[in-house]
Image (cartoon, rainbow, N blue to C red; front, side, top):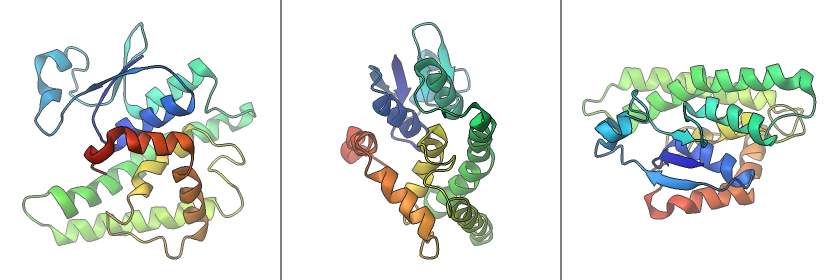
Length: 204
């Protein structure tokens, strides 16, 4: 396995999986801050110019949640014992990609990277992010993980943005179930190793 990435939310997801499943891999940093993702060598790997990319020995895979699902199917790790729960797990991956990721990402953009501030845009996306926090807290009110008692790729997918909630100016004060879930994942050995992997270069 070869992982091409940077210290980003989406690269972190794949890194956590590889460490959880104890899959051997080599890491190739692509500095997206200096534009390496737009260079000809990387575009030959992913013409979309995005990280992460995972080479599995046969082909280059893109899109972090798709990579998670593919890895889970290959290794048998991170899926659910109950096949009837598979659709729910996949739905969480889509929810992360279509809802949590875009709105949390916009909060980060308007609070950290935008050259021209837009308080209205920041307030709008932060409002949606707070709704997402409440929704996830409700979902976790009667179960340990998003799909029940088993830790899965659904949890890995949604964890990274929530891990930096304070950095985004969000609060979990009224989200006790989500706080419990977050703490449990933070303390998993693979998560600790993934955070240490980037060391002082971790930007999220």
